[in-house]
View 1 (cartoon, rainbow, N blue to C red):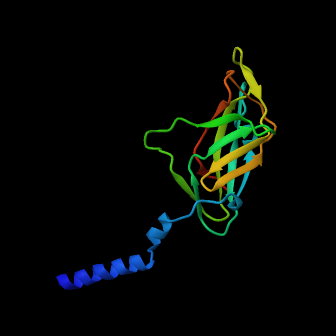
View 2: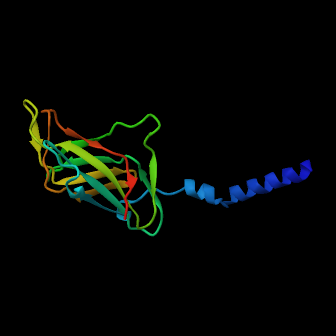
Length: 173
């Protein structure tokens, strides 16, 4: 019996080394999304982010490729002006201790979204307001650059400003 168990283990090792991969292993081996795999846009949520001195939007990612691919659960987002100067950078929203950012696997033709909140009124003494023209999502295989809707972000006079950013979550259809 010990000899047949050794043969089974040996056979399994040969299969693994020969490139045969189980479905569980294949799930772990999902490639990162390439910039061309994704469509990215902003959705104002029909005003759900708007208040007295704050605003926001959903950044929406759509996997337009035919295969699954992975992106960070909390992609780095920068807002820039037309001269490529960074005006605002996303910072993670407060997460529960068990909610450590990792990766999200985007199935083909599925939408994911992350919230973005910012101060939209000049409520700071000596503050500043900026109007970014584009957003840059920094992804492992390259940046995705898209137009940013005409919005104003305000904050302390330090450069660049920050906005609160949530993790990606699957969007309802």
